[in-house]
Length: 42
Image (cartoon, rainbow, N blue to C red):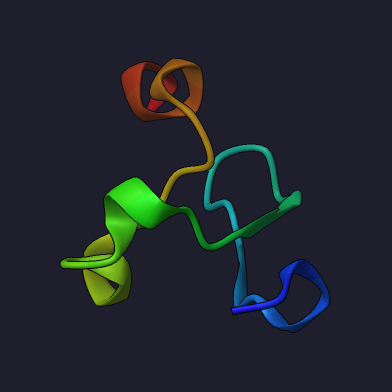
């Protein structure tokens, strides 16, 4: 997958867009946070 075509989501905490990462490939539909920091703040 080329980087320019990666899916994006909006973080529910910081409201910033973040892109698909390889480590999320098995559960992308469940990812809500862009980082561990945002996940801890929720």
